[in-house]
Length: 482
Image: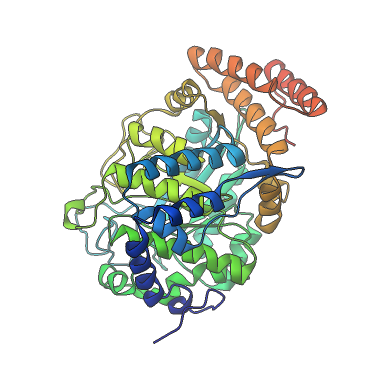
C-alpha cells in the first residue's frame, strides 16, 4: 500500500486514499469537540502586522473537522471567519470572465459529460479561426477582457496546434476599445512539452478539474478514452508547472462522489503543489453536477444541498486563504450571492456553454455542456454586483506584469497586492462603464468608483488612479495599470 507523501510526484502518494479515510475518521471523531474546533478557527484567523494581513491556513485534516462539524453556532462562526478572510485579502472585488467553447469533439467516455464519445444526439462542432474571431468580437462587445477557453479531448480534431492557433487568434483581435487581455486554458491533461508550448503562447492560468479524487470512482466514471488514466490526469499540474506554467487552477465536480472525500483530496492536492513546487494553486473552482443533454444529475447519488455547498466554499476559503475561488453560471443568482460573501473571488457573467453561442441572439442549447442557471447578461451581473457592494473587476494586470506563481503569492501573503488590485479594479470598471454599460449601470458604477477612490490610503496611488479614470472617461486611452 502506498504511503502518504505530499512531496511525492506519484498521484497515489500525494492524494493518498488511506490518508483520506483516516482524515474522515478523525473528523467524525472530533466534529463535536468544541475546544478543538475553537483552536482550529483561532489558528485560521487573519492577523495584521506592519507588513499587512497574514493567515496560517489549515491542513486538510483540520479543515475536514470544520466541514464535518454540525454545531449550528460553529458553522456560523466559520461563515463569519470566511467572510473576514475574504475581505482581508480580496476586499470587495470580484473578477469577471467568460468561458469560450472551441470544440465539443471528444474521445472520452465520461459518464457525467454530454460531450462523451457515445452521445449521438448532440451535434459536434469545432470553431474555425474566423468563427473564433466572430465569437471574441461578440465577447468584446459585451465588455469581457478575460476568457477561459474550453475544448474536448480529441487528438485529431482538437490537437495542441489548434489550441495554440486559437489562443493567438484571440489575442490578435482588437475591436473598437475591446481586447482580450488574458486567455486561461481548460483542456485535457497533456505532456510537459505541450505545456511549454502553452506557456510560450502566453496563456494565463491552466485549469484542469480533477472531477473526483476517489480513484476507484474516477476509473468507473471514465470508462474509456485517455482520461481513464487516473495518474496521468492527477499528475497533470506537476507537468504543467514543469513546463513553465506559473498559475494552475484546481477543481472537483461536486456530486460525483462523497463531498467530504473530495474536499480532503482537493486540499491535499493544494498542499502537494505547495510542498513539491513551492506555490499552491492560483485558483480553485467549485462546480456541481448539473443537468445536460444525455446527463441526469439524479443518477449520481452524491448531490449536495445548497447549505452544504456554501459550507464547503467557506471551509476552502479558510483553509487556503490566498487562493482565488471561482463559481460559474451553473449556479443560481441566490447561490452565487451567498458564495461571493463566503469566499468566491471570480465569477463568469453572460456565459454560454455551447460551441459558438455568443454570436447568436437567442441562447443555443443543442451543444451546451450544462444548463446555465444564471442567464443574466454581463451588464445585469455587473449592476447586481455593485448593488451588493462588490466592485466588478476586469483586471488582468498581475499576469501581464509578471506577478504570477510564487511572485503573486508572496505579494498576496504580505498584503501588498491590494495596492495594485484595488485601483486596477476601479480603472477596468471605468473602461466597462464608458464603453459598454447601460445608463443605469453607468450611473451606479461611477458613484461606486468615486466612493472607492476615497478609500485608497496611499495619496499618490489615489491621485494617479483618479487621473487615469478621467483619461478613460474623456478619451480612447485604455489599459492603465499599477
